[in-house]
Length: 149
Image (cartoon, rainbow, N blue to C red):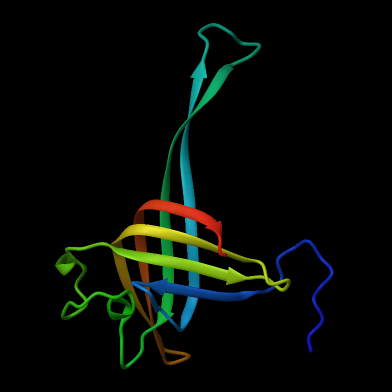
């Protein structure tokens, strides 16, 4: 049996990414990103203390997902869409993406990305390794974080 590391840093854990309740599978990368605009408020003619305050704006969430393209399913299929040709302009409904992980002590957490829309889809063919991968940029409308009971 593998010993549990004695560290506060995340070393590894069991990880599952699902779309519409089905595992996406064969992921090379899953990268959620949060961006929040900040507005600097400056005071005119104040050279000693240029910034009066910073006002936070709304947070935008994006997810980059990269996976190997499989003979049985491309990225659009893996995300749970039933459209022909993998053309994102045919997508008319959002999906839910669930990120779940279990730590070495058995603690479990989840992030639900609700009403996700595919913003960008890219395919990469690598000659040296003879692999084909797809990357999707996804915009969720809402994000919910919490422990799993």
